Length: 567
Image 1 (cartoon, one colour):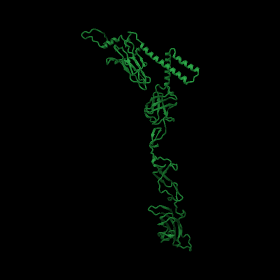
Image 2 (cartoon, rainbow, N blue to C red):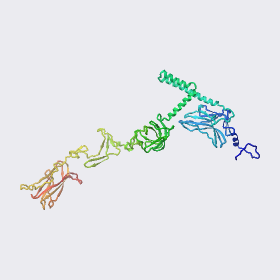
Image 3 (cartoon, one colour):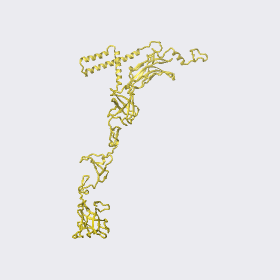
Image 4 (cartoon, rainbow, N blue to C red):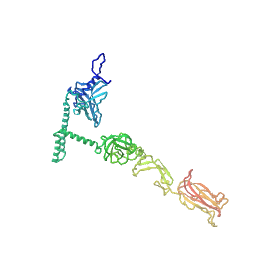
């Protein structure tokens, strides 16, 4: 349909009109806004005792539809946050779906520098802004000075058409209340500053008078203009200070991934320079060398206080770290101890901070295995002719022994005594007193009985081949070896074993019927310590000869312990 006309009398139902037709009609010549001089024109009031506001009586016109509030309407304001601020907006809202107009408080978003919520104006809803309410962090009541009237702002609300001159008295009174409050506050602060300077600072008279006159000048004449100028200067200085991350430390939660962290400061850091600092809440554990990129200025390596790049585990998710830029890298501040120790290096139950973070020791505390500073060994491994490896409990905790004032390891060895060690030898500090066999030399161990062939030699006379003294008591096993020459048959050379010059054996043949064949004899002899043993021999004929080629003395056991052996 391209043409429409209205309004005409109905004939048999051919002229039916909707409410929206009338609204569209009135919208052509009546503008949106509040009606002047109807009640208090929908002004918003706060009594400063609670978190409620009061919308006074009045009327408004929105897109051809009429709204009227006939009495004071109480609207609640959501409680303040403890950390951040917000700005709420009081609106008159037309809802096409609900077919009604009502007053509402639209809650703003929490922020350090908040902004009021935008008005909704679309095919479903159309809103007029009546007032903004600043809800500072921690407040418990709404004061009139925090209410900003929006009714005269034609882009947000405005006055209906040109039916009457709007009454701005209420708006002026609100501004006056704010002005009086601000002026009083500055006057009181000036008086406090004056008192502090008088009581705590030593100023010469000229300096004091100059300072005081400058303060007085700010409170005389066009006070509002001077206060506004001061406020602008303070605001500018504060903005500069906020962005100065050398003078103060910024804070943010990291984004990005482990080892590659992103920090976004508000206001943004403009450039890296020495001394820039930030507190960064890490979002993921690091697994190696890590960087941080602040406000897109480029990644910088994170190092510990010793100048080394952080290693895996140095940065933990959910922990806040302080970083300071040294001109090239960000340095961790006060990160605690460092080192490459692991849990098995630290005594069980003890804690320490390392490059990998805090560790709890697992090294077994062997205090119970230590008696007066002496750790009990758990075995030895001996190396013949060299020494012994002494085993101690794994994780042994060794401390000083009280009397000798040194750590010690005890080896359980009942046989370690002087009587078991040969005289002149020392084992593990114990000097031996066991006397060895005597009169046994390492010289020629053979003797040619017929080396001198003279008729004066009595071939039946025994010759002592070897003699030695034993310092053991018990039974010893004596083994001798002989060889005979010049004999074809029979026993041409024989020997005997004597103890203390008393024969202990009969004739021990030196051959077995063959020339130059070795013959061995083994005899057990009971002895007492100090007994002398002689090995004697003789040749039956001058042309026969023989010699002793082997002598061994041992303890007479199944597995004999050899006392000495000559061959």
